[in-house]
Amino acid sequence: MTTPSKTAPFPGSAATGPRRTVELTGAQALGLLGRASLGRIVFTQRALPAIRPVNHLLDHGRIVILTHEDSDLYAQARDYGDRGVVVAYQADDIDPLTHLGWSVVVTGYCRPVTDPDALTRYQRLLRPWSGPVMNCAVRIRPHLITGIRLTV
Image (cartoon, rainbow, N blue to C red; front, side, top):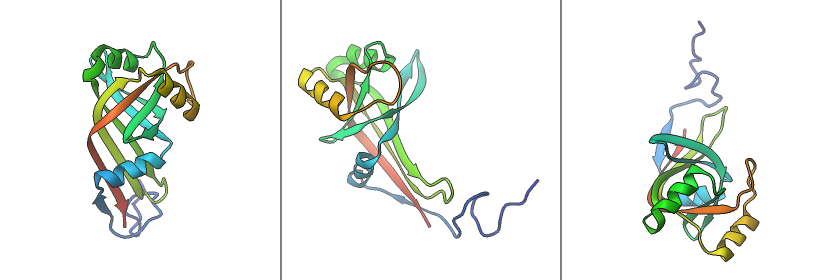
C-alpha cells in the first residue's frame, strides 16, 4: 500500500496546499454553464434515477437539449406538458491533475419545445455526438441553481 504524498492533498494530485470551496451565485453558475459544451441530464426512468451525458446550449436562461421522440426524457416532458417534469442538469470543468475547477447543478422544470421555428434553430445550433437522429428538443427552466468553484 502506498502512502499519499505529504505535498499533494489527494493521491495523484498536482496541486498543493489546502483546498477551498467557493459558492457561486446563480448568475456566475449560469455563466459557466453557458460556456460548457457537455453536461449530464438527471431524470426518472421507470421510477429510478437515470443520468445521460448530453450537449446543451443556454438560450435566454433556459437549458436546451436535443433528444429523440422515443426517449424517456421526451415522453415525460410531453406527458407533463405545461407543468413540466422535474429534472436536474449538471456540468463541470474539473482538472484531472489538480482537481481544481467548478461544478454547477441546475434543478428545474423540463418541457418539450413545441415551436417548430425554435426546434429548427436548436437543431442548427446543437450537434449531438451520439445516438439516433435528434428530432425533438426539451428546455429546462431553472428553479434552483447551485455551483461551486474548487480552488487553492
